[in-house]
Amino acid sequence: MNKKDLLRRLPKIDEVMKQESLLLLANDTSALLVTDAVRDVISDMRGQILALEDDAGADSFDISLLEPGRIAEMAAARFEENEQMNLYPVINATGTILHTNLGRAPLCRDALDNVMKVSEGYSTLEYNVEKGRRGSRHDLVGDLIAELTGAEDAMVVNNNAAATMIVLATLGKGKEIVVSRGELVEIGGAFRIPDIMRQSGAFLQEVGTSNKTKPSDYENAIMSKEKLTELESRGREAALMDDPRGTRRFETGALMKVHRSNFDVLGFTEEATLEELVEIGHRHGLPVIFDMGNGLMLDMSEFGLNEPNVPASLATGIDVILFSGDKLLGGPQAGIIAGKREYIEAMKKHPLARALRVDKMTFAALEATLAKYKDRSMALRDIPVLSMISASEDEMKDRAERLADEIRKAAGSDGIYTETVKVLDQIGGGSAPMVRLPGWAVAVGLEGRSADSIERRLRKVEVPVIARINEDRLLLCVRTIAENELDTVAAAFRGR
Ligand SMILES: *Cc1c(COP(=O)(O)O)cnc(C)c1O
Image (tube, rainbow, N blue to C red; front, top):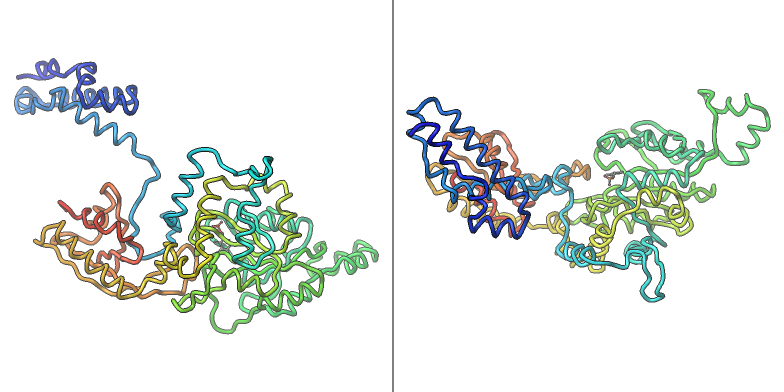
């Protein structure tokens, strides 16, 4: 057999499309796309034949590959490959709970079901069924958030960065916002408090130092309307002179505290508490804003998490709190603004509200997640982020042992080594950076393979397993692996 014979044996597209399996596939999906896949496979085959060295090469070519049935099989596989989404599931075996690169908080079952239910058809997104007329999406979770946190009202925007933007634009445009120099943080990417302040049209009034900011620093920085009018009445020079840099001053709009979500300061430090800011702010008729970030709704100190929580923060009397939906709250990406009604109302009316508003899928997931918080034990059990934080060491040790067994079964016991080991897990997602949660992992070694090569291999399976490497050992941390994912993790070692 020579190359020409092989080329002649290549089936026609039509002939391959007549194969039963492809007829079904084309019918269920798209005849156009299945035909494209067949064309691509035939063209690849032609390329392979043409690349053969000579007739000797042609002789050893496996001609069964050219049968219409085989081509159809390859085309079906190609079709599946082309259908692969760019956003698809992976298994998080890093032990980092809020892994920003892996989509932060996984959603609870009821949130997922609710997204399906609400998004499949039409919904009450902006319709009041009782009254038979237009409603507002802002009213969907306001009452629930109020009930759970003690806020008067709430509003939901795209994320906490958007929340910061609209809060500052509403309360601070053309005014000064007083913030401690120890809290001018960068959260990640291009999100820096001073930059977002500039974007919102508010003027940052920095007070204190990197390590120490006292209540009196805030108080001394407040520029009241009266003082400003008095300064300006003494002429331009006086108005400028009040600031050591000779820059123009504006009336103070609010006092703001930013939670040090992703770093810690140690040593000779001091900061003003929310209570102290509330006392000063309210004495001067100014709102106090708290950019809290993580959205923790419960006291989780018994699990080693000493972070502020939303209800306790609001109980200090602050006027506005803002936090993410997909950090420790454990819901979808969102920015939640809660607090005093007059301020929330003003934000709902701001032109940015429309630009930053969220979709029905977000509301569906958020409402179902928030509903879990009506009962602390239900929240701890059902919200994945919280159950991962509160998982007991015994439970994780047991899961690690079962995973190790499964892996040995899947991989065959030769040349494989597994050991269950203690690890320290993290919250992640720029939250509680100093917290280390004692957990368990399976360390896996394969004879003749480096940890790096196993790690790479685990990323190449159908549902990639993202593992951790520590001191040249591959670790599968079970805190972030769900019960129903254990089989999939083990299967990744099959045929290693
Ligand atoms: C995470 C965080 C943000 C940004 O929140 P996103 O929801 O990621 O936009 C803002 N402020 C603080 C204090 C944060 O911790």
